[in-house]
Image (cartoon, rainbow, N blue to C red; front, side):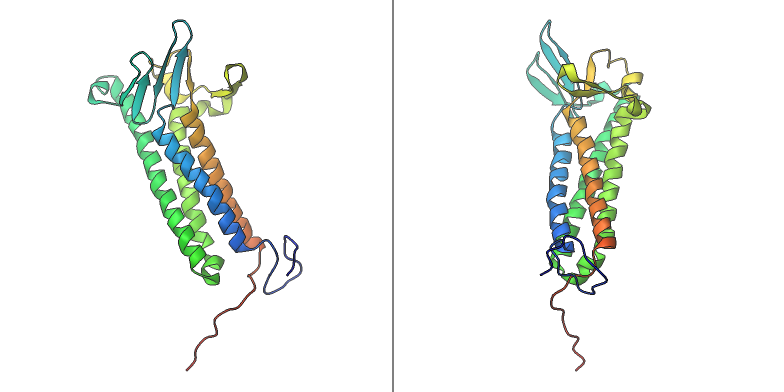
Amino acid sequence: MDFHLVPRGEDRNYTGFLTKTIVYCGSLIIFLASFGLTISAIAVPKWVSYHSDKPSFHYSYGLHRRCSSLTDTCESFPQNDDCHGEDRYFCSMWRSVGFLMSFAVVLEGMALVAYVIVLSGGKRLRESGWKILSLLIILSAIVQAASMSIVVGPGFPDCAYDLMGGGVLTVQAYLFDNEDRFFVGWRLDESWIYCTVSWCVSLFCAGALVFAAHTLPSEGGYELIPDHS
């Protein structure tokens, strides 16, 4: 057993510690965390929120619900009553974010199935399966980034960290600039952060797969002998 982490020379069959199987398994574990963050971004109704100390109350919007501490309840959002007149544009944009995030979950689910197929399919699939797998992961990351950009918009590079306010990321967001409902004091909350971290982690997983495919040679071990009878 070669205990070097990377291959040396031009060995045909690499038997070192860092193999493609380990890279697949490691990236799968990390990708599962990314998948969980995507689900949390959809389920937790805290994409944007407003908090007041005097009087004390908290209000937040999720992709499918909005919550208020005044009534201590959450209700479906956006509803038909919220999408009339000038609010139709906001509803369309907000529903687009929800649709894109749901589509990202579908792509991530397909990537998880691809992981299982590649890992259980033997050496040949591990040698070539990275292409479709990394493509699915990258597509899911692009879709999530697109949904995030609808909320963040062109002000994303001008972000600033409000360290005194608990470390919540505040930005000049696209919908914030175009919606009167988001007055001074509203901020992007944890669900938006979940989405951002999720697609960044997904890109890392895809990069690890591509790097392993182009760096690590074929794994050693036994291979099936063709039956010519």
